[in-house]
Picture 1 (cartoon, rainbow over the protein chains, first blue to last red):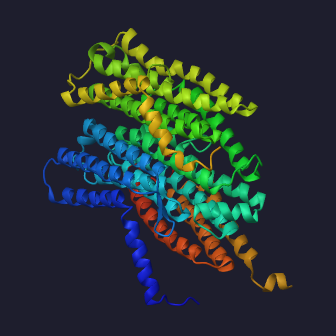
Picture 2 (spheres, chains in turn blue, brown; picture 1 turned 90 degrees about the horizontal axis):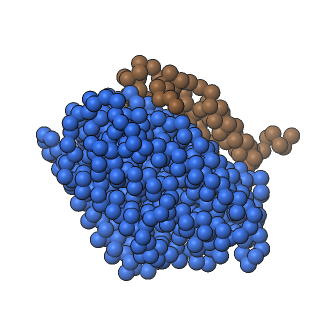
Picture 3 (cartoon, chains in turn cyan, orange; picture 1 turned 180 degrees about the vertical axis):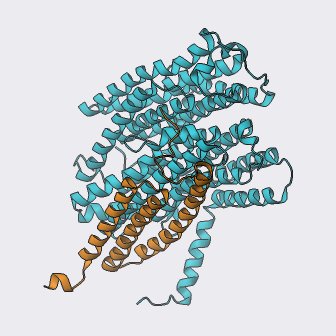
Length: 512
Length: 105
């Protein structure tokens, strides 16, 4: 049925692959790091947690060099349109490597994780594997690569969630994450197959051309849209695909909770932006296109539901990790607002918000780990009086929570301000209502976030049975740095905003 | 009569839609973790049938390539999933998902 390729064809394929590899160096480097870490784990004996963690941090930091070099390369589609190199992708490369580094830093702090008798083993290798997957999610331009990258992230994340094998909560979280993840990626795949059926293309820009030229069946398209949104919504943790997140966030090792809530969520948003902006044709020259509008309405509903549900349900939470899980559902809603505007400012503000969310959320989880080391509890009621015994941690947590609410002078404020101003700029009734919901739910969130500092500083501890674990120098420095950065970028945000603007220029023609 | 004898695009798509629905049904109603994973396999294979069908009727090899990757991925996912299920069985002595529910509001 199919002819064998001739020698010349094979030669041309090889030369295309070779040319593409030059644009693929950070990913190749990280894959090599992944394998080095596995080998290192095998050859080293004894207590190797520290060595492996340091090797991972150094290795990940090393990749910044290769990513930086990519600024010199022109934008290109490589490997037969499977993958692309552009400013948007480079932003997310920096972002995900940074997320990986911070996840390793938290893991070093978590005594619960390091006390495992079997050692951490492949833990750090899996973190690097997830970094590769997330980078590829942000840069893929083909349905196949998107699906594979998403599964790479997913499979690593399932294993990491269940890493505390002796702990029932961790195993349970892994099972729930796995079941929801497998079903939603299956739905995403079915949605992709429908899109492939309508267009006979798997490259997202070709899909866009095909859809504009030949039209489509609206019923099939809305079905495909819903299925694809189910897959992406699961990664982003948005209502109504959020059912996994509270249980998984509570049961997973805390560093992995922090990693999932920032990294894997951001990867979902990166992929959604690329897919939605590029593959789905929108209104061009004022002519409203049906397809873009379908997507937009679905995303508006998801955004509003996420903001309301996440913020309202969080009020009743007693476990801090669970509380942050609901808060992360709410933040998914705020982030979606930026995508809905579909203009330069909105997209730019999503990138800024993601960066702010990374710093403040990782910071908050870092302090939660420190407190759990000391008191062995994640319950809000056990935080009473901690502000006196751990002043730095208490102050830092307060800053991170203020930033999560979105009050000045923190990074969280800059992100929220940009998203709401993008919405209000857009005018239109629907956008105004969304902005209103966003602002009102932010007010609700003030209550449950501020409940934690209230317990820490203004209430006395009922029992004095705290283990006397003095926090090390390293953790103090890390907390202070994260706290400083959260405030610093809240005041001097210009460079970040400019860089985010530069990163979204590639969407130029697609965004109004 | 020809509708029943000549197998065309719609027959394949119907089969795949039925498989997808059965998979979703299994995932939503069954309590046994292994059966849920079987439902997931049905969903993935429904998508595979779609890809192969569209590849056959649209021309082009993308769909065939896609389904090859999906088959490999389904195997990898099954391996990770079963490892987690075995761990669940060791801890909880059951693979019934309704009894593996210790975390509450």
